[in-house]
Length: 252
Image (cartoon, rainbow, N blue to C red; front, top):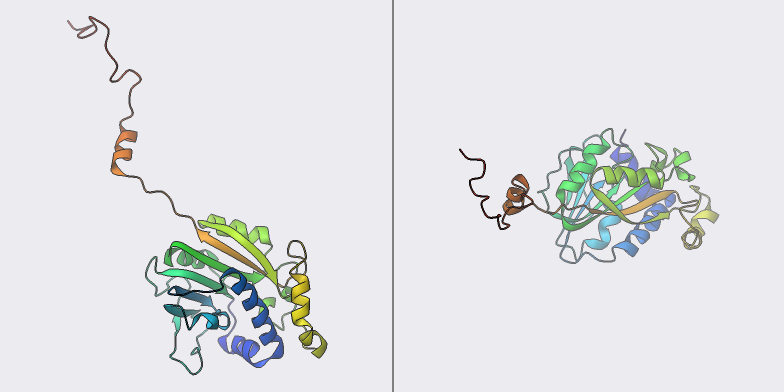
């Protein structure tokens, strides 16, 4: 079940914990994708808090928000780029996107397969997608006071297996939100330090979210010549010299 857009906006823009979470995830995203000059960047779910760094250089930034969640205008003070859509029907041309960021769009969806199919469809050749989901082994998935406490949390192997079933190739991964989901002043102030320490831990121990970068698997096209050769396989002796007297052998 998707969260309401009002609750998501309240968390990310009106609470200290939400702003801290926004920064921690965005910083990790920027280590993967430091720029998007001249590219089309699509966000699905409630990914708009992460997309602001690309507004100045990208060719186009679009924030897709599912109808079950609701939509809000974004970014504040600029022309609106957020769009209400259906989970399995994105108003984006096939192969149009260079980058797709999915935050609060997969784990809360009742039809995750449709989300992944649309994500694959809109990505062009060489495009990349970033999937951000609650970590099943982290503290944030166990607290329903944040958006990460709703929906289906994942392990890394579960997420990567689901992506592979929909023609994605996982490339890189990391974790974020190592500080506990607490509004206490100490943890808010220590968040940056805890994130730096947590990023050095092996695997995804303690991270509240998993971040997986995946590319779209592209199959080699089959040309008409190859298909014809497969339909008419070459016989073993076809084209080889025939023995003397072989021509017409067996004919009456």
